[in-house]
Image 1 (cartoon, one colour):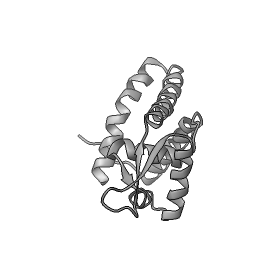
Image 2: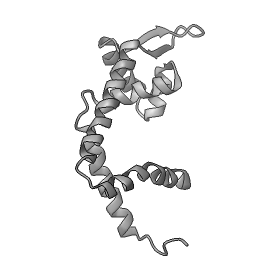
Image 3: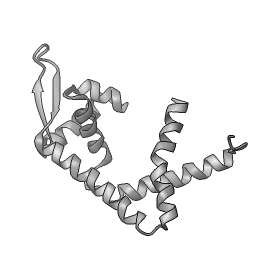
Length: 142
């Protein structure tokens, strides 16, 4: 039997706490979120044109070109002309970029694990179930 009521006030409380949680996790980041997001796209999807990255992030081409230039200057991405259209630039995740992304993700996970040590055993049991519950919310609302 399903719980009869989950109010908008309950949802608002969850929204606020999840936002605070995300900000806490991001407090250990060593690179700007936009740069990490681009590296994440490249890891998941492989090499992409700057225009495709800009579309995914809903930013102007010039803004994404600047972000890519910053990442390239740090050695985190490789940039090359598209073999089928020399006017287009294709961006690929470099080995250094992949390692840096792993470091960022590991730092975030370690922050969560340290914070979880402050919980009771019962609270940690609930915490272990949260990813599946939140995934249901995401899939359910699509």
